[in-house]
Length: 234
Image (cartoon, rainbow, N blue to C red; front, side):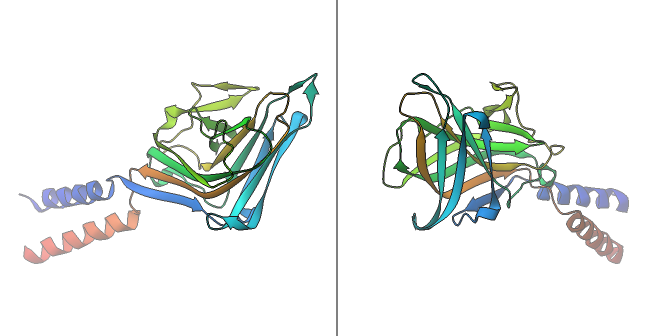
């Protein structure tokens, strides 16, 4: 076999080795206020706020999320949604396509009614996405409880556009996709008593299964070393 053929085979092996699936973990159990951003929609009907709470978490600090409806139509309370994004840990799919993700959090009911539920939130290119699957629905436990959603792909999310959710609008998890912020989605939905809800969030975690794109220098160094070894032998 010619030297060039052998070198090509070695480079391909290096690339295959580095492109195997890997994992990236984004997590927060401290919740510094500067690390999170909040978007309320529609803001005209209410608001969502959050703050770092110093003790009482699972364990230590946690994030207290408050969702409030301020406008009513008779006895009907308008829906208010709060999108909370971790802006300190942004993932760029250029570092490896996202094949799937696992989400988990610990939640605590603090005050209000049971008319609130949660989903995973994503922000990409200015668009807001939420997971189609929900959790926390009817949750009213004053003790910390663990929730998780696993094996989600881009098609398991829907985009918020012109006031509605479009199930066919999905985030771009491919290598050409823009950087992604992950977080939590909380919705206070209509009902005569659902006006002010406070929830605790702790041990927030997103685990991404990716294609594990290598650092270019790693491949170059591996290939260069292989070529030098072959030249010495020849």
